[in-house]
Image (cartoon, rainbow, N blue to C red; front, side, top):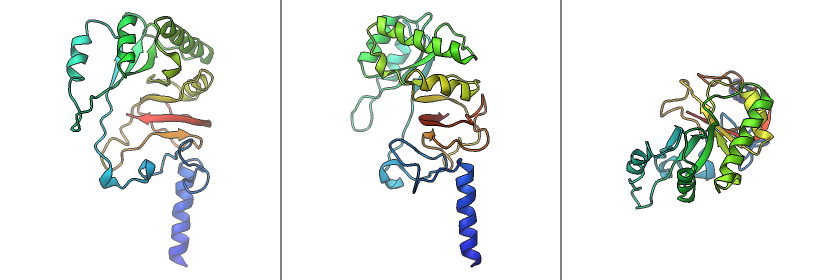
Length: 218
């Protein structure tokens, strides 16, 4: 009886820590993933998962940095496939023709800011997201493929509320010093069941529910 009680207590504490989400019952991929879910997506064995390296760049995308980016992305995967990355672009000082060229080349374009500043009021944040998307559309970049943002230091209840109203599905601005070691890395998770406690070293973790919206910890 003691062992059964211990196991049940552990499961209950785990569910509480991830806001009541349970990978076995009410939070499953592709639409939901619990913060504490340690399983490899797709049911793969850990030994079968290759090393994943996420390459992301911030701020203006222009000719000044183009040679550096071309050098970085001249490297190929061991199987010969070219590598790609995500540019979280600052609209101001960017060459939109260059942004389009990278987008057409298979790179992801995300939102950094319009002019280097980030609003903290939801309606202004929504306006920034819409302005950024419209500017990309004007440059002939497919705005429907702009899905992510990187906005450190924000109240993420405000951020995710604005994201959910503008078709954005993930944030990559949550820096963490809690989950930055090989043994405790986290796969991206959703806020269908927000975890208790703040995970971000900068900014705050959402306390409200945002179904299907993903967090990438950095």
